[in-house]
Amino acid sequence: MKVFAGPALAVVLAMGLAACEPTGTPDPEPETPVIDPTTDAGSDRVAAPDYAAIVADENRAPQDKEIDASRAPVETLEFAGIQTGMTVYDIESGGGYTAALISRAVGPEGKVYMQNPEAFSGFIGTALTDRALPNGEIITSQFDDLQAPDASVDVVTWSMGPHELYYSPDGAPEGLGDVAGTYAEIYRILKPGGAFVAIDHMAEAGSPPTTGGETHRIDPAHVQAAAEAAGLVLEAQADFLRNPDDPLTAGVFDPSIVGQTDRFVHRYRKQG
Image (cartoon, rainbow, N blue to C red):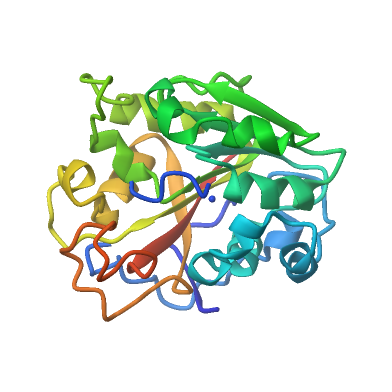
């Protein structure tokens, strides 16, 4: 896995609604050291779980294992720096693919919030409640109302979802949350030094954010701009979900590209 360090260092995915960087993901700053996620600056925890063993566990749900190849779960957990005992907030948890992995990684002393907007309830059904994660808490809210205490979360994850801020599904004509308000909420719930990990389907460089509601893609420059406006600092980018053969124009549900989209992976840090 190639990881490119970002411009500053203070630090550190549902089957869900996989719908729903400029190709030019911002160039990495030259030779800035990469922070080791197993020594997270936002927490005094230093126990990094065996991510490969978590993913290989035969007790995982069969439907989750079927999509592992397209989600790079080991690399994702490692990049996010998920550690034993952490509190993690999984935005747009969908059916809980990422949350289930996080639940295993943080263990019984940790916690995972599983958030989805009310407008997605019909799509998700009972998928989250059926999982009955012992250390999980289900949250139904808009993206700009995360319903967690201030400075209480070690890591916020949002997999295949930031583009949803520009999508208005049936039943939610006003959308799923204000953009600035959403990133302000992410900043609010993170502990000082906590991490925000954003993964999404790539749109062409310079594309307007409205692609989020059309092809369910987003130019990562929009995500970066919103995160930085909220006070978060881009710390690292990774290429383990990149696909240079993706034309970046087809909708993510198009049979020609479904499950194989070019995706950016960013890690931001709340300094403090």
